[in-house]
Image (cartoon, rainbow, N blue to C red; front, side, top):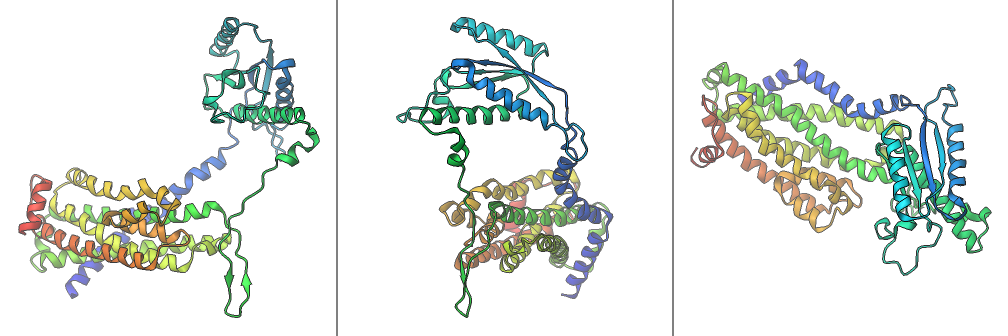
Length: 450
């Protein structure tokens, strides 16, 4: 055991003292936060050139155009930042186009406007159907746009569909105006329009609790975002810890083979002792990453006042499954490193392992939405996905049943023992092998025959 711990300490020191480890430790959280930071910093760096749009309003009396014109004027009055006075949004201008009276003439009119868009004289144009003010029949099979006739639709034409500001303004304005007109036709005064159609907020809360003294306490409101982001964050953290610790270790094994260091080491220790030392070194490295990342995340959550959404029991189960996942996948990475001679060969053999790690991400949303459903239970029994899926289910209220959690842990533990045994047999044969990388069939023979 002393030799195993000596190798583990050497592997741990070699990884955590390397510049690559320190850089990855610092840069990875920064890279994950970078999109939000960059988006916030660059949100005001926009093209503020004025956009011109044409409007064909086919409603009786062109009633919708007036609402659009009012909305555009309100938008243009608010394009400047109140604090700096600098323009941060583009202005819009509307051109009223009298609608043609026949179908062919209307089609030709749209084509002419499209040519102006292609020439850059217009940014786009909209065509408002003549029947948009008519209520949708109660017997309609669906209120989907695809099921409504063209006269009841508003069509937006542009060759820049990714610019959404004007489209969103049109959508909100037209729908507000149409609802207002429909309600007025039904005898509802426009002054009551917003009050009658105001949405009733649905607030997410946990279950009320009762103290030992009998006092019942109402639970605090919780955002829907936390119910989704916490399990997703824990699963992503689990994958990060495995990859950050395992890949440098695998590359280190390849370097030892290339430089004949492994032959010297095997003169003092057995192949199993060497592999187990490397596995324990990987566990120690992963433990360091867990302490840093999880501790930092919990500290930030405490400062933000959302730590109550991350119970201590969830963190403890996460740490347990994280260590088992590191042992399970780490043994595979080490076996692959022992069986190849360069990084190119390593990448080809790592592909199946990486695909196994990606499988839980493909099913994560479904598992979070229905953590105790049949799909979640089935995937939990699939060993490569068990640690990630189990952690996701535990982090989602009401949590994973205790007996299923224990079964999942036993599955991971049994799989880990089997993989360490198989990896040990591959390691014993492959650590001294040179030349062409073995195929999957040869690796299977090494496991079966030793």
